[in-house]
Image 1 (cartoon, one colour):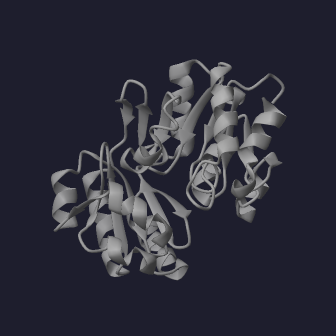
Image 2 (cartoon, one colour):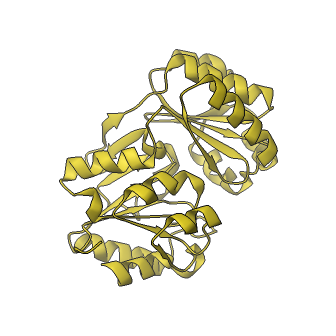
Image 3 (cartoon, one colour):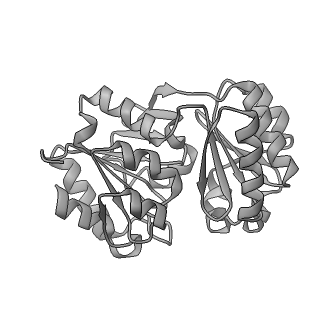
Length: 273
């Protein structure tokens, strides 16, 4: 990247957020100052609208986001969707079946809600997502019959997260879905599998944002830490790995900065902008 970048795309968990799921004061100040300077700062996250609600006040200066790993591109200021990519009904059913075979916890991300089977939030630590329990309890919608809900709202489901008991179970779900669907699949956390429609990922979400805002992709910087960030890190003009990123992410990136508990985003801003 030779020209000065015009857009910074930020993953949230493990990137903008520290290990306590907070934005540090130093990082928040640097990001706000960058946005005030005219650079577009956008979220590029697997989280959906309900899952970013806790940060809506402190991140109120942000204007755009690629949510649900590209499934929902959103205007934060106008509070309206720019683009929605629902999962085809038959592939949604395949996700539910694969999850059931592994006794996994399913999270449905719709254009507005995060939906789970009633009773599973209390058990979320079993599925390696216990750190998110307070957020789940505040912002998720519990239903008595998740399958019925999914089928009744199939045209709204943009992402399915399948949280497994371990990585081996996730690998089995991935193998099943790779053999029976055309879904885009990405590993996350310890045993989670993100499922989005074919061709939909954080890179496609960033492309839509760049087209909307008139920013060339080569002038976008993307920052992340996990496998679900790989597509956008490779597609952006520059990909940056957090110090806590896994080795696949670090290898894919042009730059590695400090970890999320030591204000790595501040380093990105100071070095590149």
